[in-house]
Length: 173
Image (cartoon, rainbow, N blue to C red; front, top):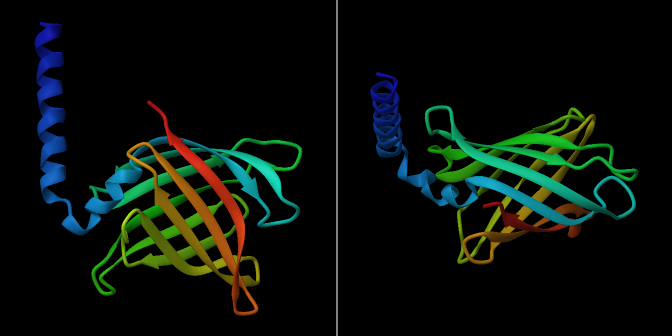
């Protein structure tokens, strides 16, 4: 009897997943690349001297398939107090652009938009808010096959872009 119930539940989940995929806005499909668990290593100089970072990322579809929910958590070290946040990646019908909305454990938030993948690179640009400070930020992701990517974050200072984050990421199996 239990085996039949488990089989029925498995069939329900399979059909529910297929229905969700069938209803998903095709404009969101380019975000599928990000789905899964990633581990990134690199350097960060966004809020001070450059220091090594290790970042764990968990990206999954949520909110009825309208948003890719990406939880980001850096390992806590002497130089890094344990930065974490969540980005919601979706599509804005009005702008006809991919968008993301970021919130973090330091009270910061950001909104950004992208025209989508240009070859193997996707770039999001928009304002980052940290307390009373607001700055333009650019996040650049570059695919390297199906399970690797690089992430660079740049901030605009006096009309030019300065790189503050440089990470290499690998999808966990």
